[in-house]
Image (tube, rainbow, N blue to C red; front, side, top):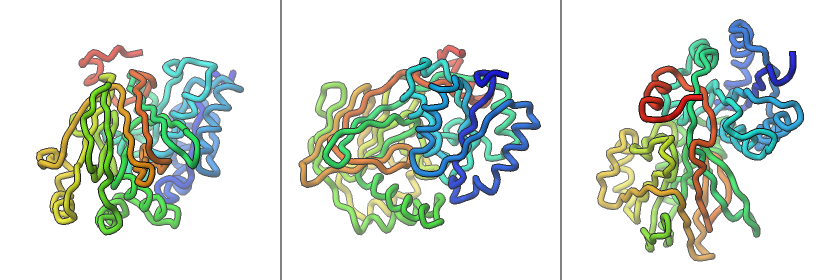
Amino acid sequence: MKETDKWLVVVNPRAGVGKCEKDWPIIKGLLTKAGFPFMSVQTERQFHAIEITRDLIINQGFTKIIAVGGDGTLNEVVNGIFQQTRFATTDITLGMVTVGTGNDWGRMYSFPLDYEKAVQILKNELTFLQDVGKVKYRYHTGDDYRYFINMAGMGYDALVAKKTNLMKAKGKGGAFAYLFNLVVGLFQYKSIHLHIVVDGEVVVDGPVFSMSIGICQYNGGGMKQLPNAIPDDGLYDMTIIKKTSKYRVIRNIKNLYDGSFLKMPEVETFTGKEISITSTPRHAIFLETDGESLGCSPLDFEIVPRGVKLIVRKSAFEMFTKNGNIPS
């Protein structure tokens, strides 16, 4: 059997605060039982999934990939797909078994946490094309860029993500950790003056507390930060929370989970293809994408319409193809 007939399975054993390492033998057995010919590789460090994916596509010609882990694992695999030039990104099929702590990308498509059901979805191989985000940011003294498949958070959101990631590194994590840091971080963060341009038009020039830009709807373990996002419309959705009080944030935390926080007068929403964000050099705003902490402003976002081919469950397949997405 040629390598191109096999699936590449990228496994992050640290996902789900170590749950993936414990459950991988079960998932491996289910993939084997379902008849998947595959080669599995386990990540050993941050960003390793990018290298694995990129190098094995280039050197061995894999065009079918399964990410086993959380949102961060999926993000790295997507970046590996975009860093290679052997195949068009949409010629590569990407599936996932969710074993993370947040699982926000999977939540968008009602992905099951039951491994047997997840493997059956992979077996059905129903695919659709989803938009992909690309952001350029400042890292130390130079610029870097990152692709993302779910959502980018800035300001307070990025602080909460960073604090949560530090807890994960110590073996603690999950949606509760995000909620805990959401409250604790209030006493460590101040709004930052931002200049935000969407498709050439200035939409904000003033203090901003937090903001989210993305393709899908959920972030932070089930918070509906972008409740109107459509993942294949070729547009970013953006939610901006302007300067507000600690009391207002705490009082409205529950409204983050159903999207009703959009009714707050401090909140504004926008859509667009290109977004730029600048701040004063002394007060940079920090960035996270798909839960992974990166660099800081200035930030430039552009969208890659329908840039990645994803395996989804039948209900999502039917919904998106009904809305005009052409199945592969």
